[in-house]
Image (cartoon, rainbow over all chains, first blue to last red; front, side, top):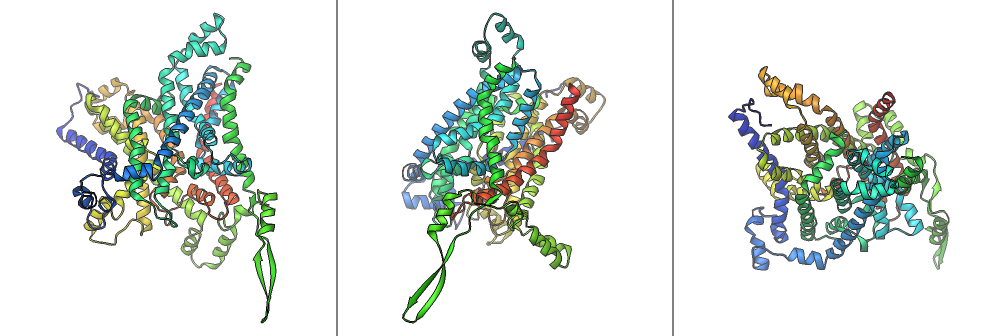
Length: 293
Length: 342
């Protein structure tokens, strides 16, 4: 908002700048600090004596001979089997994104081109489904899954995550499809295309921005999920987030905190990269439902 | 689009939602009426040279046989809903008769697990939602006043807390606030209290989790408000400047009315998300002093000895009722709009 008329006083400018700097510190410093600390030994990052050790690396020098150490990473990835967890995350994320985009584009296209009442009610039902806490759904899954003996394996989790993700994907893609003019597919229908051909050859090519946005959100949901993956997968098949929790330890066995720290950094870094590249799409996705109505 | 075409296009996603969202809700409802079997006991007579003793032991064989025959458990009706771990009807009646003052009564009731969790969940919603709206709006306003060239990186930094999963976000904060972390240690020094610790005090734990909630959710409010601010028309703002309106008056009378629909949208979404607060409790290891409804369900489901399906399902059903109450005003409004639009 750069108005020629609007003269901001210096005091306001200074206040504004200070506020933004303080907020960015609050938002980003925890991540920077964790990243820095992941290259130290536990006695430094969680120092009983003096938190300043985390910066001077007093114990890290004593224990490893250098100011930085990647021990936590190498141990977590090999001994802690974090490689397995990240492989599982890649599998789950890949299939969840592909399947939910496939189902979501078909469904949302139909919703956006239907003028019947039921299309409206389906969207409302999707909104209600979106509001359901995931843990209540999980408490519904566990018993039948145990009985059918499909608990603990990756395909079950993938299907469940796809379904949980559908309401949001439908709403998002619906608002994107609404922006594509109806005349485009209508003319294709007049020329003798079937609905599916019009969808496949006319609409999808102009929908890529929307599809990428919806894909990013499916990816973030599958990648970040804790509730479903922690309860529906067995130890062997755990993805990254439940794995991090298992490093924290319980009353029965002591965890390895530095493994958790390095695992947190390993899991967060790819996500940050991705958002950095696709920032515009993430923001357009968050606002699609709100601003366009 | 003809009905038949619509059906085939919508079938896959509709099937997925019915099978894995609709049916589980029904399954939860059915499970909530059942409770796990009691263990079958038998009397064992043991005789030795000094006489005979009769002891009661669990008959493992019979117990597991019953469990196999009826894995759902025994029918319990609304029994689970009213037991001590849920609505605790009996206990409340007892407290009402036994306690002398109303304060004491409230004290007793809020110590029951379900009510304790309900109060934490509501407190969390009540404090986090308005603060998220406020902070998000302020950040949006002030970022909007920054030169366009450097906004990109600033927005990236702002949305970081939102894109990490709540478990990771709360862990990252917890490691700093912990007595052995940077903020915790400095707080101890500042307050001159070497025993000051987050875990020891219920109030401090609650405050920490609420602050975490604001930190995590504000970026979402920011993004939506920021986008809405881009659509505010310039003419009325300029007219207001010429008429001598102050900055605050412009925000109050032009910007806010324009973005009002968006505000209700953000409020609704963050209310729904806050109501299911759960991961931060695990991240902050705060089970001792803060429990939410979702955490109660999780706790039942990871129970070591036998998974308490019935108990988890009953809490789930009551959580769903809570969500329904939250959503009701919006749904009623949408329905009215839909009817008038026709």
